[in-house]
Image (cartoon, rainbow, N blue to C red; front, side, top):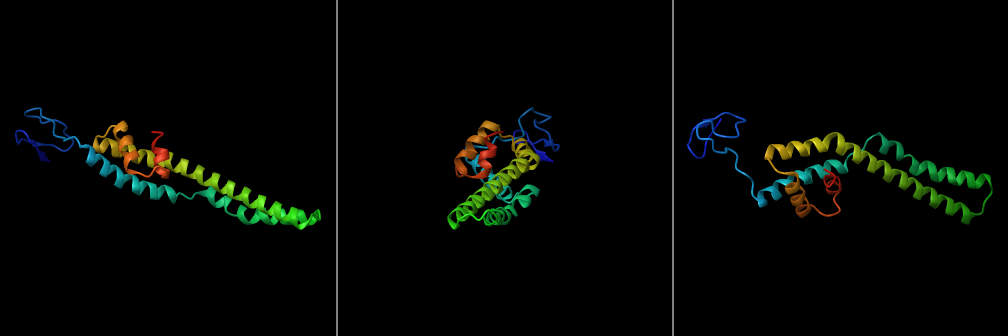
Length: 155
């Protein structure tokens, strides 16, 4: 329970206006407060997004070993030269890294949609921040290449 800043009357949790005088009980956050709250909140979410390793990532990791070995064995079977074998192995490593990168990107997308999006919307509702104001603050306080900023822009 709180008290009205205007008349001092007691208010119940969840009340937005004073039952006695009708004054707003919630003070709007200024720009600096929104930016600081957003920075702390998004930094935490960015770390959790970076660590989003699900089944797609774990399934793609063995490709880093399997693809080059298969390329080597295929080249040995067809008795290609060492230059062709080396080229095939390099291509297989690049392909495996591409598969791994796509798996990580897909896991991050799913993690954002299933978990982080709701947290962000709850955060905005709890602090009564409009999406546009939040997006503006996020673009100011987060590095341009941060993973979370790429996802937040889609809200």
